[in-house]
Length: 74
Image (cartoon, rainbow, N blue to C red):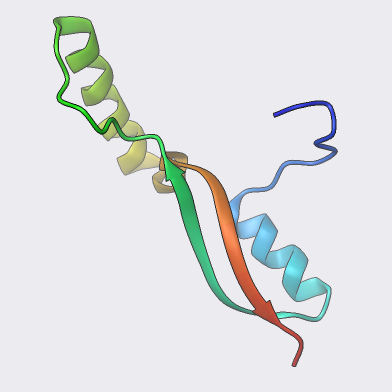
């Protein structure tokens, strides 16, 4: 995130923007997962992982840093 980002989107608002521009969205996938890749050690890190699981349950798209859209003009 830097000063060149003029606007931020959720998955839903990104798809909406493409559809309003006349595109048909064929796929929208999350990339750059925020889930830990290595085993968690230590109480605080395990606690963070438990909290993250709740967050991912409540807000599933929060796992991803970015989304990639495949869209086409009809």
